[in-house]
Amino acid sequence: MSHTSAIALLIGGVIGGVFGWAGQWLLVTSGIPALIPPYTWGAALAALGAILLALAWPIRSQVRTDRATTPVDPFYATRVVLLAKAGALAGSALGGMGVGFVLFFASRPVVLAETLVPTIVAIVGAVVLMVGALIAERWCTLPPDSSDGGADIVSGGELS
Image (cartoon, rainbow, N blue to C red; front, side, top):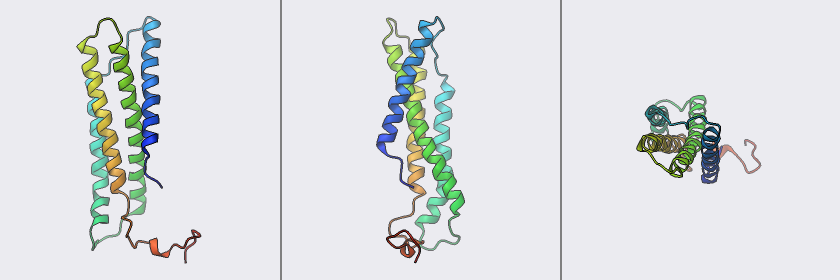
């Protein structure tokens, strides 16, 4: 599996930003008040980024040591790397949504700190989730000079 690409994160952020801005615009034009993200949104996203790092730490420890006492559990590593990939994409989309919220609130005639500050906290939480997920994804990767099965694979993709 390849690492999460920067273009995928950028696309997720742009899509999230468009949906965030358009969603706020639709709410306000319908007469419904705009959504203001609570402070707990940013805190929960940052906590998810920290949890991803905590889940990936044992894998990193096992992969980086020369004399591993126990082999890496491939199922656990696969679950963590998939969760990290999903976290990176979700963090970019939610960060983009927060940027869309900020752009919407900044385009209003009166800009209140009660709308911008919690939205910026949410953006910071989404960025922490995305960065933590990207680091966790890298931690779950075997080094290129690893001999864990890499030497047994021939160019055709079959095992020798």
